Image (cartoon, rainbow over all chains, first blue to last red; front, side):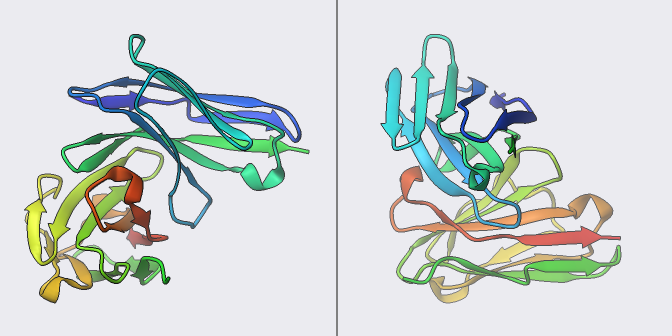
Length: 108
Length: 114
């Protein structure tokens, strides 16, 4: 079957850097997406990696290694507003296959 | 542009009752998706509409769930009769194309069956 594994929770300090990992096992892999969801809010698209390497968008970076079936989301200069759940997902037949999400807790 | 709207935002019903969730996609988006997240677990695909047609309903858990999209605009998801395991957050998403990058999600309906 297809599955994505993420740590359930990560804690970091405001202003620091945090990395959230995702390992996947899928058939017909096309790329890895990342979504952010604040409590009670809508999942919002952050980034997508189709090729190996690092993609940077402001304070957010996403990395993919297809040979290792692994990716991560890196957040720099953490702010309290970054407290949320972060999901990795892969597209498959017009739908998204999701991980269970990592809850990011930020301490002042 | 208005986003994807879902209502109610919360619903608490008793086991055996019926609940209908509604999703209003972004105007002009032909593709509409329903997903569900059971507490602490992954978000799972339920079904995909293209206009008013069901493109893929492979994720629907059983025949207690019925989704419709009359006229290719808003969609409803009815659960009848509701069971305890149906509790979770039901998300709707819409897109103009089928590329995953173009998905816009609603804030979800939190369904609690007691």
